Image 1 (tube, rainbow, N blue to C red):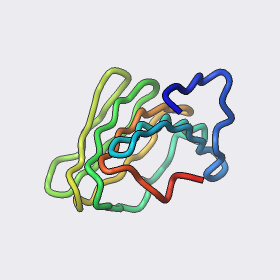
Image 2: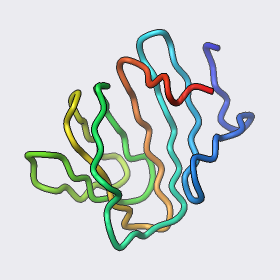
Image 3: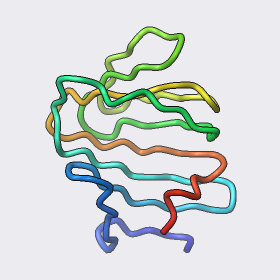
Image 4: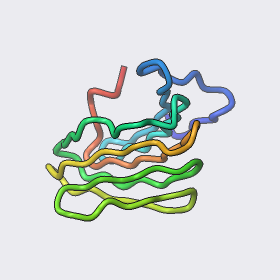
Length: 112
């Protein structure tokens, strides 16, 4: 599929307070991630993956934690990146946040 109309899509409920919609080619994936369970007292556990990742904060505010770097307070309009294998995580500072994540290669485990 070469288009995704957000208003016509049905987000995948990953867990309570976390939904995502995605589109991908054979090498690139973009994921709209909506968090609705903030603010969080603690960050999510650190994780890493073999995919390169960039993320755009479309709504809300977060703290971005990335291995080997100082934590960053990010708000709508800011971006972050994590290289392959780099541990990273976020903490929500607002009730709602929307991130637009891009991955290369695509995350096969996200595809239903």
